[in-house]
Length: 262
Image (cartoon, rainbow, N blue to C red; front, side, top):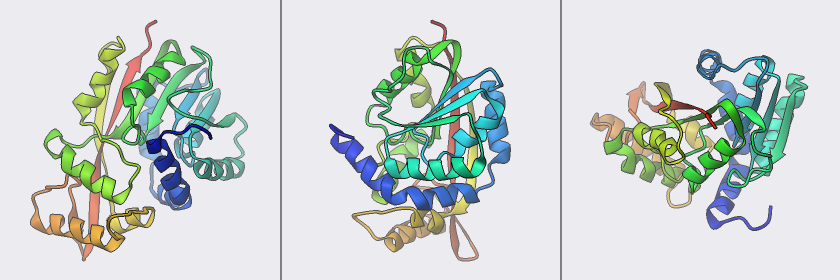
């Protein structure tokens, strides 16, 4: 894709490398209960046309597909879409469309979708407010706009960002929940529903296997997280803990749900 910003070029470079490993990692996680809870929160049903923004390897896209009329997955990274296409073929779903495109300039007409969702991606966007504006634009009146992302505690967000940027150079900023929810007010959206929970614990070594850091080695990053776990103060914001010598991390995740009123 031509005319990518420097940050988006980094996203494409990193996520092309991460695609296969990330697809494997997300497939290994048991998410059935969380997926059902998300569908309930957004009211996704058989009359909905859904857009999954930054769909990655298509895990959420395919989770939603059996329960709605149609799902379109949009992603900037060819490698991620390749993984999504393989998963789509294996699923047998016939109501899914995958599109390569930029979340800052979505190739869809105003009001195309009744549900517009983005999961685990807003911390990568260099202009998350502009992405949300695009999500609002393509959502129908009465539809739902949903952002699900990691939301560190405000006093730990800076250290969380520092560690994630070392692990993944395409990381931007993980917004605490109030900061994420406030993005809608700038666009005139009503007060959202917010649901926060914890994802994990999961092996930090497994997370690092999907990563391609540049400034540190994976082992150096693992040791930094091991030291934080041993210290017991959660300085880095991952709730790191040691179990049998393994470093486990937990991610605070929030779903912010707005209703499109105009």
